[in-house]
Length: 551
Image 1: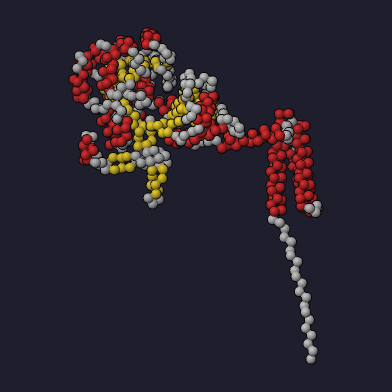
Image 2 (image 1 turned 30 degrees about the vertical axis):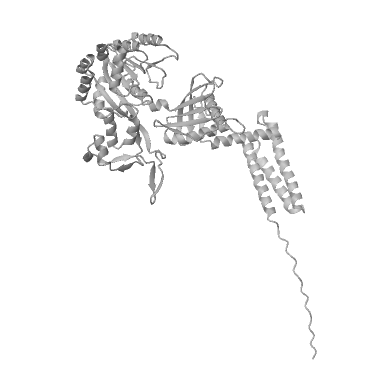
């Protein structure tokens, strides 16, 4: 038997040609871009009433025709893309030519390098307005455009937003900028404490000074003269705020001080100052009198204006004539006549102004500071028939009394003029969210004259809260500072006839003993009561009262 083996022919399969993934991506990009342009043309036609439905139909037919030629008729992908783009351009160009014949020149479209640049600048400006979290505003409330593009103030506004991002959540009351050719310093004051900000480029800091001065209506060319202005801002999440701006400079350095919501922060009532109930009951009868002098005393930046304003605000300006003489009107009270001391006025000129005010026979006068001894004698004579409030930069009530008597130069006249003296300090309040309770050391309480059996716990600042399992994070209320807001601590010295008689003889030690017998509470004692209440801490009253003399 013969067996024949046949060799089978093996045919190798031809490789399948797979479509490139790049082409669908190009199709998708072109489709999305075409749809975006057509949607913009639709909105434009609707806005100017240019036959919206007709032109929508034209664009849709042109689009379908272009994609048909590209994907089904022409054999080469890239050649089809060029033809499709030509059809798209023709249909869009037809709409542009049509709209330019129907609209005035101000609304016409022109495609050129300049027009594209202008379009890009407008787009940047719109994006800047949307992304900005702080907007400057004019006094009438109209918004000021946020700088964008090549505007030299872009960096200045960015620096301004950085400062506001720190200041506004923490309820800052002011910030300062000092800059020269080589360095710049920015500080934010919160509850009387200065917090330095990260170093800024001197050029940008100077630009920020000019940026704020310009929109506050101040003279940019005048670098040295002291200027003042006002400005409004709107901050996302923090509402509207008013800036009181003061600028000054020298041949070497520029300075800008910005008070935040000065009017709102300074204007308060007697009940909200922080006086103890017993102090307020002692003081209120004196404040209702229509004679005698009431002195408010404290070091600089310790709330003198707020206290004096609260005193004046207790009088009715519509039934009484009320006037003030101040270096600067920090708070405008309705119905009150505010007069300012011109810069550079000498003591004689101020005395004439004060005498003229007294001759007008007002019921109440407020003088924010004592400039000369002659003014003290003038006030001492006037208070026989009117109420005068006077501010003194002194540490406590007794040092204010001594200064007053020395200025008058007549012990009896000075003593008979006095009705009350109020001394004060501002202390920061512990943040109620993150303050930490602790058991105080009995030895420390003994030094502070506090009974250990009646003070089971005190509080200190923290700035952090515990979340989860022993994980700490920044306190959302005080933003890590440990304090939120300030309150006044006071020393109130009210004079009766006996006290005035003792004082007129110059017996200051007996005068002090008499005040103590009448339940006068010293400044340090008031502060310690705030500590026991949990409103503040021992470290804070030590800081706040440490610069002055306490009993």
